[in-house]
Amino acid sequence: MTSKSNSLNATMRKFGAPQTIIRQYQYWSVMLRPAQATLGALVLAAHEPAEAFSQLSPESFTELHSITGQIESALTKAFQYDKINYLMLMMVDPDVHFHVIPRYAQPKPFAGMEFIDAGWPAMPNLGQVNTTDAAINQHIMNHLQSCWS
Image 1 (spheres, rainbow, N blue to C red):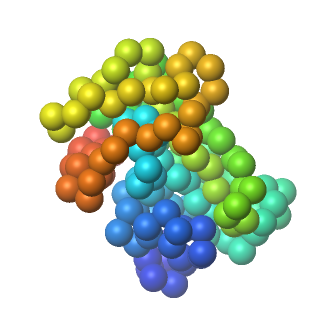
Image 2 (image 1 turned 180 degrees about the horizontal axis):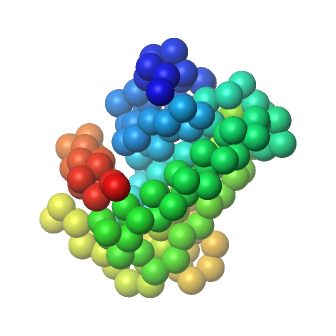
């Protein structure tokens, strides 16, 4: 496992790393997405210096398989999502990363808030976010970490 500081690319830093890192692996980091489009929205960022998915190493792809299973298991245990979307947009932030968006048919209560999935049942609406603060985001991160296998 690499240290958190030497594997942070610009995209990871933009999404708040190292503070937002929930789980770090050899080739990837799972981070809480600071703008919670839906409850438990994450960013899954590659550590390798790649700006195209095809540039990642075979080892990175192998690890990705394991990580997606862990993400889905933790999000299910934590929030019982209805669907999950993996979005690889990379229009603004060029380093390889996914937005992992758990989807909810109904509003989801957590930490005294009601989280809405504004895009349901269509594409996620990343422009419509549930307003959280640092304390709520930390609570979401702690809850997800406690649900990680």
